[in-house]
Length: 512
Image 1 (cartoon, rainbow, N blue to C red):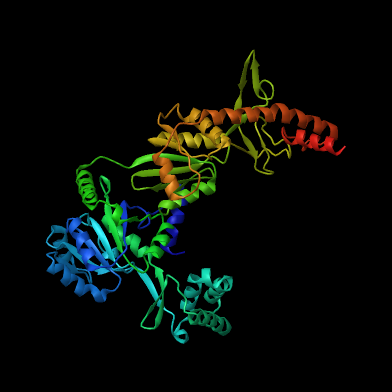
Image 2 (image 1 turned 180 degrees about the horizontal axis):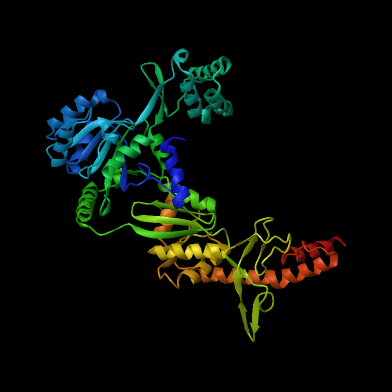
C-alpha cells in the first residue's frame, strides 16, 4: 500500500476519524443574473453599473478577446487579457490599475481556477460556457463522442440511444458504433429543431452546458474571508442557449434572476458594503451546529451537499462533519425512536393516578442477532440472545455532541413519529444546552436543508400528543389483544394490532 493510501487508514485506526474536504463551488454567495442577449453594448453597460473595477470577463471563444479588450479600452474601461499565469497582471488588477480581466470560460482557464483575491466583485460570462461537439461528420467521430452525443439526445432519440451510449463506454465494438452512427444520421437528416443543437455554416454542433466552469468562474466573486463569504454577482449573457443553460443550472441549486428585475445600483452597494463589513469583522463567525436526523442514509446524504465530509466513529456510530460556509454542521442519526413505554410500570407503561395518565419511558433495546426490539429485558424475548444494542449509547453520544455545539437543530421526519423523537431529544438536550430548535424539511435537497436551518422553529406539541395517544392505544389495545392471540394459539411471536384487529373482525362479520 502506498504512503498516500495509508494515511486515511491510519487516521481512522488511531483516531477514529476520516478527513473531509470542501469541494470547489459548494460555498458561494453569488447573485446569478441572466441577460437574454450577447451584445457588447450590454456588456459595457453592466461593467459601468457595477462600478467598473473588480470584474472578470469570461469568453466562450477566445478569438473574441482582442476585439472585446479593444472595445472596452475605447470606452474608458482598462482591460487585460489573461493568457497565462502573470503575477504582475494580477497585482495591477488588485491595485485597481486594471478594471477588468478577460479570460477563457474553460475548466482549466487561468481566471477560472488560478485567481483567489477579494478584489473580484463580479463576473460576466460573455456567452454561456459550453462544450461544443461537431456531429456532422459521423465517420470521424470517436466512440467516446458518440456515447456523449447519444446520452445528451436520449430524451429525444429514446431508450435505445441511452442503452447504446452506456454500451459504447464499456465495449465499443463495430456493430455498436455502426448503429450509433445510423441513429445520429437519421436524426440529423430530419433537420431537427433542438435547442441544444446549433447549425453553423452547414455544420451541426451539440452543445452541452459546462456547469463546472460556470460554478468555479462565478465563485471567484465570492470568497471565504475571516468575516465569512463575500457577496458577489455573476452575469450570464447568452441568446441562443440561455433557457437551456438556466434549466440545467437549476439542478445545481443555481437560480437565475432576469436582469430586468435587478436594481444593479442597489446590488453594487450591497456588494461593496458586505465586503467592507467582512473586512472589519475579526470574530469567529463559523457557528457549530449539531444537526440530528433519523436515518443514517439521510445523514450521509446531507453531509455531502457541501463537499466531502469528515467522519468520526463512536462505537460503530458514524458522525459526519461539514461546513456550509457560515456554519460547521455535525450530523448524527438517531436510528429512529430512542425511548418507548416501559413494560414494568403501571398498566402497560402508563401510570393511572386519578384523572391523570402518566406514560413512563425507558430506552429501546434491539437484538443484534434477530433484530427484535423491546424495552425492559436484558435478553431477547424471541431468540434469547444477550447481544443487545441499547439506545442509551446513542443518547450519550448525542449529549456529548450537543455539549460541543453552540446550537442543536433536530431534523427528524416531519410527521407525528418524527415530532415525538424531536420532543424526546429536546427533553434530554435542553438540560445541558439552551439553544435547541426544530428543523423541518420535506425534501432532502441542499436548498431545503439551508432553509430549515435558517427557519428553525419550536416543536409542535400537538403532533407529540397525537403520537403519545397512538402509542398508548397500541399498548392498551394491541398488547392486550396480542396476549389473547398468543395464549389462544400458544405462539409467542403472534401479535394483534390496535387497528388491524377490529378491521379484521369487521371483515369476518360482513362475510358471515
